[in-house]
Image 1 (cartoon, rainbow, N blue to C red):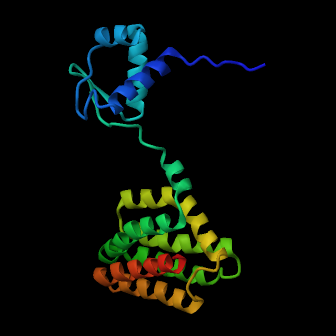
Image 2 (image 1 turned 180 degrees about the vertical axis):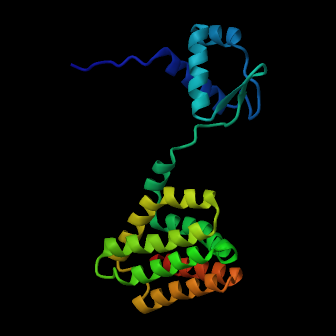
Length: 222
């Protein structure tokens, strides 16, 4: 027997409001009509309208401002970040790495503390010791690059990198298993040179080396 699931009225009302926003009835920044206007339009009670608004506010589409009303703050529901990353191809992942890590490398060169530099050097050494296993090597590589982002002393960049790691890790494992990578010596030299640029506080060189290395990985896949 097929069971028909009843969708709560608030969910249905939220869907209708979202459709009207997508259709352009209320542009970004617009104030929605009050509950007494929306309720009869939607064919529901005011409490249902409030719940629908609460749902869309939780998704970042609407914002309730005390004493002012309800305003449109986004024209669509933002897709879950994890879902975006899971769908992303390896090339897209590497391009995102370039955007995050090249800037982080420059900031790390400018801001790194002695403790942060020691962490980078240790991560570089550990990276060489895990060449035997693809998974362990990728994990060590992630720790190296994270140590650079951490040295940049920008919590937003670090949060972005950390949220990115699961998809990034899988992309790098896939790439190595495809045999698409630099030679071991060339790869190690690129990471060692980047470490020395950060140690020398040369932000321009650090930025260039980080970008060049990641661009070479991207080229190897194309």
